[in-house]
Length: 262
Length: 321
Image (tube, rainbow over all chains, first blue to last red; front, side, top):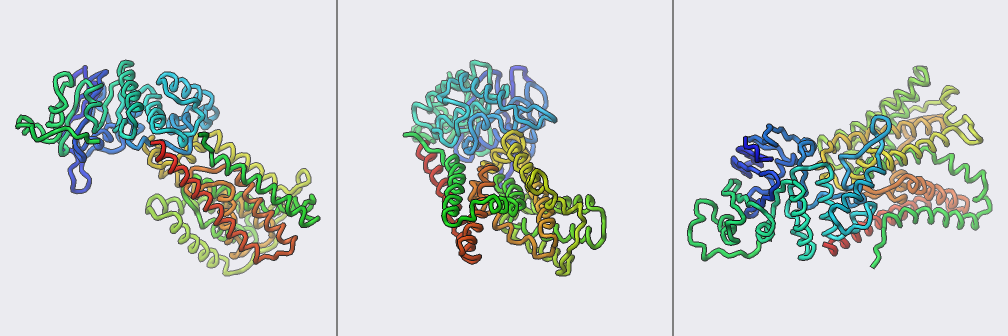
């Protein structure tokens, strides 16, 4: 195993009935980098990331975290290994406030048998997270149901990084945001990388990837095509790889143009 | 524009409605606002409150249990027979009754989560089964003459009120504490809000849901003991019908039919709204049949308000995305 890699996935396969969603995919994420995960609809991006986050279990393949073999059977296993994921639908609880959204499932407890919520600590930590992320949320006691799309996205971010996550997976984080809110989020992702997090970013918005990612991982039909260094490729190169795949990427590209996959 | 928190509004509305009803009936009848009448209303509704709290755990968790009244029928005849036919000790009869209630809830929970039958249908089916078993066991007989120590539940006077009033108060306080202060309570509310998100947060949601049905069954068991002691008789027809009152009270008291919302004080107020309506209409000479119509209309109104609230929230979220 390469010590530079915080995540290594080897030969990951996943079938849903007769459909092969992933066919022997290998992925390596370097420490402290942002890696974009791109591919057309049905390429297997979300499935691959859900396997890493414990939402799905791989049929075949191995995962290594910090060079150690990891057995990720559920989201709690992933969380213990320092993996946080922000889902496309954000997986928030509209009936709960910000602090409870951040902590539910991993509550801070006190009292006999640890059955009681340590609300004081939870609200204090939620307030700190809001401050750290420089989020426009007045109080951790606000209900998530009353928030804008951007604020909800920030709550999901806070939830994912609240527990010393070292690997953060984001599934289409800018898809439901306006331009201003999307830019704020991209700058937040950069800040998180600067704080040492390794980030996997699924998106259909290729310019977002080119703006903030270090490398881009291309999937097509459940198979890895290539990993491109963002500094050495253009938008057209990425789009061509997504549409044609590795084998035909050298063909003339005149007929392929970026039309926003979002 | 400032946004209105409809859930909060609903919580206080029910308290206001209760006060308005009490004011109206006290004008309509001089007997309504007497200590004797008010204490009667409280005493007569203790077991409804206990059942409604049990049901609230299932409903706030996003489920429903229509079988609670029939669980009472089955638990009731089994407990009664153990005491008056087999003459086993009271403590053992009560313990077995509570265990049976918990087991019936557990069965409901397992059917809903393992066989994955829609809770409304699953508990409708089990309610028929529970009633059939209850009649098979009781042979449609009534059971009377309970030991004095059992009747203490409702006949024992503490600080001028029957013991079951304090038992109910204790359950109300405990349930409120569980909802607001414990990890379990937070997860119940989260389960009703977004089950998939809770699963992704690493919680075994199926196990949690089964636990909620079992807890409901346990509380139904306690309510059954109060019901038997209050009536000093038990047969298989006792219990059915309770589910309608508990369900109506829960929804009127702000427990969402879709799960994720509700609080115990408002739930108790919901029970008392129905009780005050029944009592006040009786005193005003409206009779029982009119009460059925009013209760049905209240249930419809409460569900419509709940739906309106959900719709308003969905629209608002679409608008903010």
